[in-house]
Picture 1 (cartoon, rainbow, N blue to C red):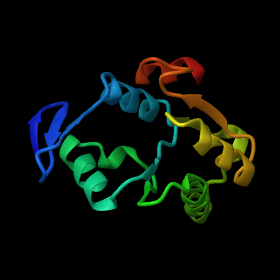
Picture 2: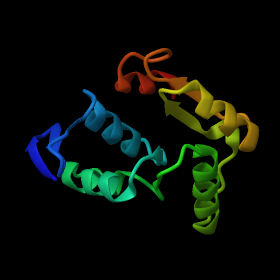
Picture 3: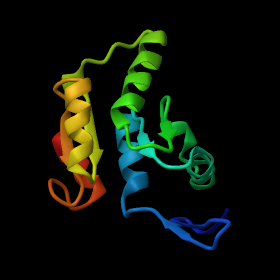
Length: 134
């Protein structure tokens, strides 16, 4: 994987990975506010973590969970457990979860609780719009 420019990588198969506009600004703002940022991603871990390193984003995420299955609620349970082990307890209603798929949040709410959810492309048009909901 190699970087083409500040917002674009090319993976081993020649596939471009492009950041949504404003991702870096959002991560900087969330971090500056002391907000815990993490992820639950249905993807290949080695590719995601390599991309995070290449973009310079690895340090923004606390206990990121990247697994090759759709059960994001399981990843979130692991994340919350890791946070407790660090001495940080997060209640479900304190979580703001952003995803582009409604069905993920249905499982998250059933297994985790009253998580706040923003659907990308429905509730927010740009990733930086997350800031309006803090």
